[in-house]
Amino acid sequence: MTPSAFIKPIPSSVAIFGASGHIGGPMARFLRFHAPHIRLRLISSSADKLGELRQQHPGAEVVLANYFDQSSLDAAMVGIQGVFVITTSLLDERPAMSNLVAALRKSGALIHMIRITGIQPDTNPKRIPKALRDFGLGLEIQHPIARQILDDADMPVTYLNCGASFMDNYLRMAGMIHEGLLCWHDRRVPYLDPREIGEAAARLLLSDDSRHVGQFYTLNNGESGLRPSEVAQMLSGMLGRTIAHDGSREGLFRFFQPLIDAGLAPASVPEYLWNFFEYENANEHVWVPNKFLETLLGRKPNTLRAWLMEHLHHFGDVTRPALIREAPTAGAASIDGVWDCTVATPMGKEPNELTVRSTPDGRLEGEMKSVRTGTSLPLQDGKFNGNVFTWTMQMLEPIKLTLKVEVQVNGNQLAGHAKAGMMGKTAIEGIRRA
Image (tube, rainbow, N blue to C red; front, side):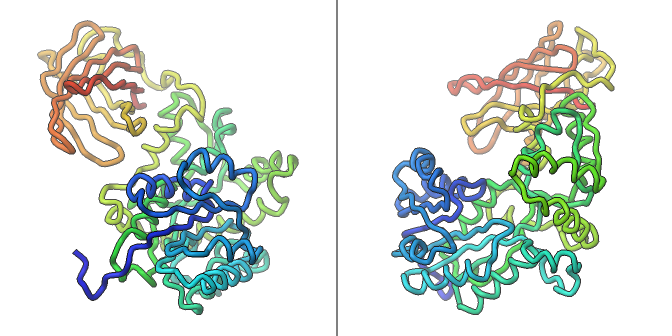
């Protein structure tokens, strides 16, 4: 319970900038489900996206506004008590945030602002390489400017600093990965699921604890960082084929050249990104895993492995891992190993790690572990008939259930279902890990 001395009002109206994006969209869905009484105003700077927003979020107000159009900002902030602020990476923050401050002061209703940043915490600006300072429009230059403007204006702001790489950045590389190659600078970084950033922002706005106001929270999923070369190895095991990695400067430029030729990226972006990645690589020690996001969500954040399993269909067809010897077609030993599995649920496919080993007398031992939450359920009463395997698992949370599992193994793939009493069957699919 929040001490009475630190109580703040919970906003009854919330505006979300970038509502069609990968953070603002999940935030809007969370608020509509968990706080339907809140008046929700979704803001987009693209007129083409307004219709889609209205369709995806019925009941929410959808408006067009731009950080550089003062009149549109003034109209968008009228009556708004809570606001979520996010900007694109190459935005000039000084006029943008100055205009937003003017609109919020004119409205006079603001209780709490959440501002997304992406900078190395407490880094001396003198350490930023000259090439990045000269470019001038990157996160490490512009986001400190935004923070200074909002702080100088005494805005009631909480900064959510994304001290990690977004997991869905790999979707931008899906075509390349489909062809068996990942070209990306091999620096070590933590990861974040953007959906959970949106949920974190929503939870902070819904909190009545005033001590969050004025804070600067750096977010990551609590796991040690990974290099893209390690991610390529992970994908190789999941897809059952080799995904090569190229961490060279030339590889990065080759990746961007088609985008530049098609007018989808400025010609200056690859050079800027390479310099930015070199800067990150030289300062990787500042990205220390922490549990703030876990505490705020009330559960363990998503892992990159779980996210990749959920989105594996974007990266190509799954085949049998070539480095695994062909498994026996029958017998208890044909299921031995570690399996990357997905279980279909009403909330989407949940990634799980299934570990199975057979005993000399033909019994099955092991566990099924949720990759997202870390919860493990031991396998009980395991049996087999040819290549069909059955076992039960006792689930205690969120409700007590006995799960009856039946899967069929075909080489290094398995498929089947779990049955939970009157709740019916849910599909299970899995690939044996190399």
